[in-house]
Amino acid sequence: MSFITHRSAIVAVLVTCAIIFDVGSTPTLRAQTPDEVRARLAYLQQQEQIILDQQNWWLSRLNDGEVLFLPATPDMHFVSAVFGAPILVDRASAWDQAQRLAVAYIAMRATNPPTAQQLMAEMEEASRRMKDAVYNTLNPFFERDLQATRDEFQRYMGLRTEQGQTPTPGPAGRAWYFRRAVVGADNTGVNFQLLDYEANESGGRVQVRGRVQNSECFETWEMSWSFGGDISRLQEGMVIPVTQNVRLVSAPCPSALPSYIDVGGSTLEHVIANQAPSDVFQGAVEEQGQRCAANGSQGFATTQASLVVRGNPGQSNAWTLFRLQIYIPGQFWVVGYLYLAGGG
Image 1: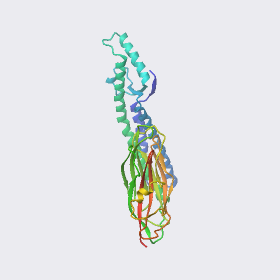
Image 2: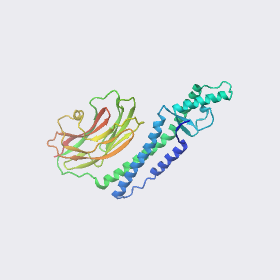
Image 3: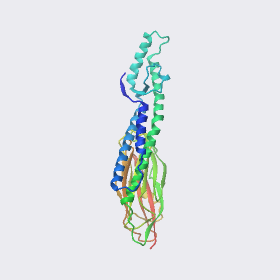
Image 4: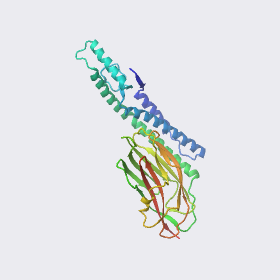
């Protein structure tokens, strides 16, 4: 039999638990130097990629119909023994083995010897049960470990913001006051959904689902953002950091096309402007920074951006906005933060 590879589910769980233990030993968030924070952030990004690589390795094989998971047992009755260590076998090799076993049964003069087709069917049933057992054993560990890593990453991003990226206050006088956040799209294709969202003065998130182009595979992404300061009142001269995250929350599809969140963007301003009762002055807040993008094989990314307030209101009934662009291949959404002039 030609083996693709040989991995024990127990060994894989132990490897995963070792990663969980390593990531779980979160350092106390004492006062740390900028170099210590940067080093920890780099380490957590490496750990997250290791976990994603392992998870994707297993998921790609569990979802591959041409790969069978068979128990490592000399017992010919595959269905009765599915909780051993799995051996991964390609379908052609499994069929060769079924044919050899059928001949062996005949040579042993067995009563009602099974055919190669019957033995192949037993292998496929054993593989289905083994794949279910492996998935149910491993995936909760992967998900728990990824969440712990990403939570710690966000805590350290917060430390970095506190150390050197606090908002710069503007002068007294007329200012922009936050009124509401809106989420919308111009047209939403039949293969795309906005599943959930929230947006407020602390930050927000959206969860979107869509079909990957030229396939029947769907991915679900969560894009989130947080502000490194108070955005309820904006004045000229203020600089507010924004942390952007993109995270795959479903199984990946075989595509290199990225999904992203971008502070700014150049589309769908009119979707936001429809929510304001008068003309919107779009030049008051400048969005700066690179988009935060990842594809299915990467699964997660984070970047820093900023909002720079370039002007104060010129009249009391003026509105302004800034926006975040959400994209998965084939569909845009936009999140708009609307501000009304006040003070004087």
